[in-house]
Image (tube, rainbow over all chains, first blue to last red; front, side, top):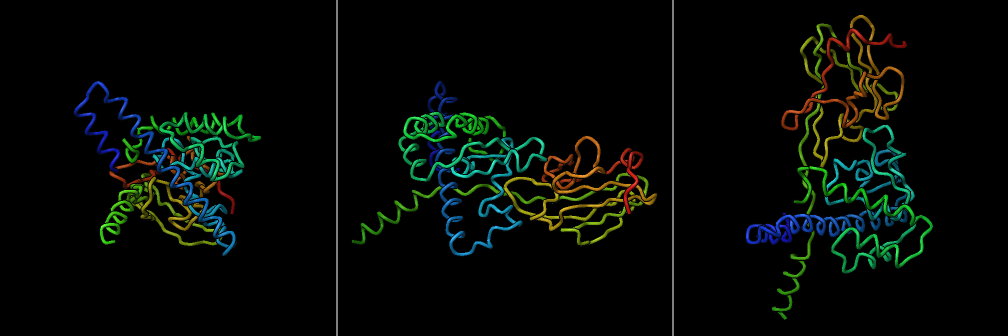
Length: 167
Length: 141
């Protein structure tokens, strides 16, 4: 449990009428923070490997490198460490790649954003909607019509009953 | 200078994000039929191991630590397909991409996370039942 959760838990006990709101917002903020951190880790690490050791990308990591398992996760298995940042950048549609899983991982038809754009859109955001809205407002991207579809899986994670998810 | 160093240290520690929770999973196959069952495990068409399970026996066992249960997953257990054959030479073939024509009914597959496991406190068992024995396929040589 991180510091934010402790603060929100304290608020829940001291301010019952706001409990649900704080509960939900706490996990949503965790999701923004941890997904961003996870995304930077994934993208930067893989960029380094592409330069230093291209053979790192092989069948053992589904040819997509570091944190490849995040792309296999379905909404029901996800926690606050979603692969949304990598999904905004890559052209890897996990719903097609792992179509044999039941249910399938989320549909990812968004591509070609970069870390700088994603960071600027996230700046000062406290909600998933804010992050999505800023990406639409700030930048033109040929796949932006699929942004809502992509961000919807993050919202699905907020209600997925995964015991390992933020609370 | 020392105060500044302490401040920086505290700032850095408080700025850290959490690490995800991981769980220890144990996964195996249980022969719940009244017949002998042979299990041959493969990785890229190479036979990795073969075990024979008497009625009621449990095996092969695979342990791994992961955020999510992934079945008998290639990268954790080192196999990508299983041939499960009864003593009447009928049986099933399961692959990590759920391909082929000799799969268990109802989308069951021991190599996949939602393959139809029984879970008791992170000990996952894939049950092969008497009904599976009765519905088994004639397998190719």
